[in-house]
Length: 430
Image (cartoon, rainbow, N blue to C red; front, side, top):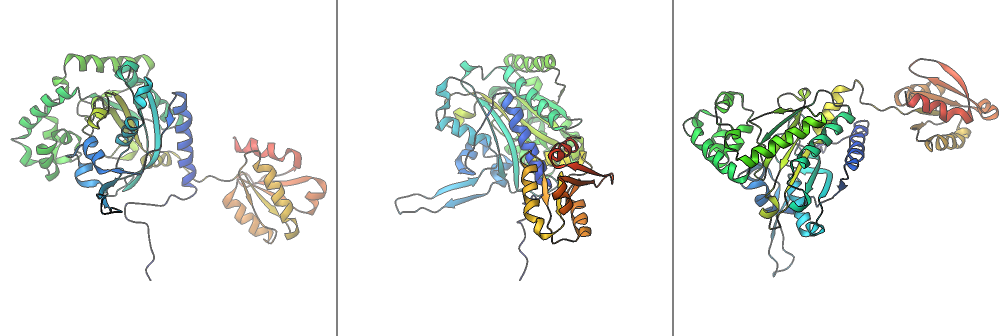
């Protein structure tokens, strides 16, 4: 019988890697709370039309990558419904905003999410068919300031603070404006005209995009097409005065708070709903596919989904790729326990559990051995799991003085039981 394995494009996350995931997500919640974001949890699957209308039928996501199925009707009077595992979460958040009439509060809604998304694309380093995203959306009526360039700058400043707090080194912010809906119509027409005589020299994907969604050609990473792409018209030349003023105000606010950026006139992002500000944070450690996160403004998405006017801006962080970056910056991803309690006989097992309980109540990470182990085995196991070993024998029980050995330095000391937690905490915090 063959051994069952995880489906292609999916993976298991195991300790100690999951410690890093928990650290990232705890940092997310802590930093985003400072900016008054609250967590939203949307269904993992939605009506297929949500993504067709929201993301765009001609995008690669909708046309090639979604996991879609017909949900069987339970009764003859019911109609089968087409359902899709969410390939992204902005459309679902905006759907929830409309369905629950959040706009009627008259206030900005600042919402974040953490969860899996699904796309049937070619698996590669940091890219999976089930992948995890951290994202956030700022959406609301215009009267609440949702169209203000200050909202864009605040989101970007929050992301810079988030990456800094995680310890991500040498990140780079690339930013652009794709203009209003009217700007995009003019620009797409110019792109089609420029691509017409050269598209046959491009890769198969870009030939198709030149017809169906010319903006996506600018996103292409095909090295052989870059010379052609670099010669295409730039969107900055097709922005109206309002779009230019909005973009200039975003940059001025970023300058004021010290967030460094590079204007990338080729940055358009791959989703139909983006308007005006688009951005990506990149990191050189990820290779050619170097985006850590990206997002932009989507001022017409609510209306496209049948809701009220509700301008917004949001982003999504590829958590898998963020974890890769953090691992690359860390020599050892493993998280060792602070102490390994080694009872020296079986009858001391209950006392060892009691000691472990005391230490764990001070937030120390504690592994528990067994009195049935030989002393040599306790040291071998403890050295793999913890920074220090605490020996608990009859002498230690009677005197209240415990023997503690540091595996890294080899130093062995005697510590009073009442001082043990503090002694281990000092080590854990260094």
